[in-house]
Length: 414
Image 1: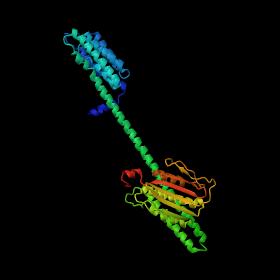
Image 2: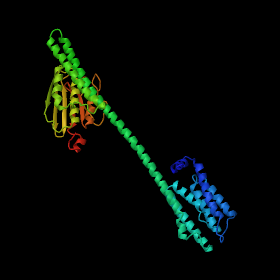
Image 3: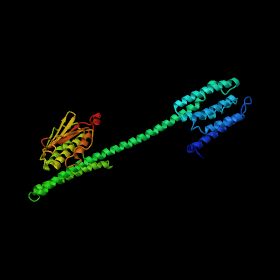
């Protein structure tokens, strides 16, 4: 047995023309049955009655394409029946369908104007017929109301369809927004992991290369120094493996696997010490006030110092470097200066705008180190400026917020 929902689905699958023909057939059956039988005291069905019926049913076939003209034609036919003296309860069925179509396929303004005109015409016809008919179809006031019923129904259906379409469009926009947000987060995570891997690998490989060179030079003449350098290479490799494991773990779905905490200002002395062992006399000046600092800010400061010292070893040819970390109110100032030879241009440093992540001026060897420092500072709401000093050497200066804005709203909790 076919269910009601199945019938509804089959009806929706029909073509518009087929559906209109079915509507015309149903309306024709009911209207013709009413037109065929009339009170003996009033006008019986004749040629004019069937002609008006044929005109109304033919017009209904085109109700989707020309709803207002179809409503005018069917309304005129209905008025013609009444004025001809043929009284029936179902003779206004064609105009009811036409008025419903006007509202459901139009807009509110057209519905209001159609309702106003239809009510006035229906009331006028009722007044005219009431003079000649002792018991007309209804009082003039009631006759003015019935055209509003199909218009109101069509308006409700059309408004509901518009709301459903709007809800569907909102759902599509929300899904697209979620996809864009997910893509943005993936992109940011890829950049973060790329910066971490670059900082870890570049720093460790540079240190290991320098220590390996020291070990190779002292292998025959001073084996103790060679062994010490190789031990430093081993320790640097172990540290790099640990940091790489902690970084790559975020790409895996292991909730129970513990990771080492991200490096921060507390690890700066050890970091500077490793570069001192690599042949650069690096000195650290840190005021020691790290209370209330955001972990992301500490990590950014650590990586900026790490990258700057790595560039000193790789590119500058400097023998000394000074690292300064100081907190001034709600800002953390990080500065790295070396005493390398004067640059060819001799121009002072130019600050990079914190809100732009375009490629800054690169050192002679190229690479992503300065880009990474700038991105890290911008990611926490800070800025970095760097460049050669007029009298020789290279300076990197970073200004970072003590607490990220989102953490400040939560009371400084990471």
